[in-house]
Image (cartoon, rainbow, N blue to C red; front, side, top):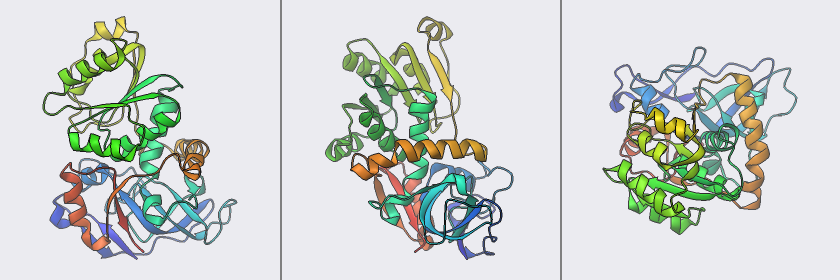
Length: 333
């Protein structure tokens, strides 16, 4: 089968599409899926550079955390899926190939409204956003939520999910153009601010203005680094800060006194290293809480562009440029 394979030195020139051994025949509760589309994520860039290795038991050479495709074969204990079913899901690695083998519990049925490209763009972003906002932060109707990197794949998913839940949605981006695109798409962003090179000051000022000084109840932080002090300033009393990404770095200063006075909660979360059972639970919540919104037309994945496997270096360069809006998708059809 064809697969995206990472070279040894971490450079983009070493990644490419190659013939590799066929994914093994599924046994027990495993399902082999013929992949039609797979989303590209920043984790793939980090894995290529040797900074985010796959967990034990997953390929270190073939990246990919999400996929959409058709069931090709099932193990003897599989009960829900049969050959030809349209499915998508998450895995800890190996999804950027023509076939991938995963537990049946980590799959969901692709809604009829989604083609392969948009299905491939959905699982990682929407499961991450849904899990962070609702399972981790407990976002409720009428609350105020601030989403950093709001034009990213997870950001565009989180805006729609928070809006659909009846929250007031605020967002930040380094680019005013991305905020304008969000408004044009009418995804549910109430207010946004382009933070540029001085995010801390702009975030605090904007939240003060938007909320008349009350602060936001939930922050979904996909950036980290220098955003952390501003997050504490922006939180309302008993607010919840969910840390999901560290594109601006993994370290920051913290005002413990402010954290205590606000009785704030800081929650860290990551999807990739979770157990099969934890991924199954997140997938079940996604299927129950998100997919009906796809069927009704309330939400949709946002796709920036599509590349074939032979264009993987261009796809990596594109994602590394930080100019993307929504998701980049690889197609294997």
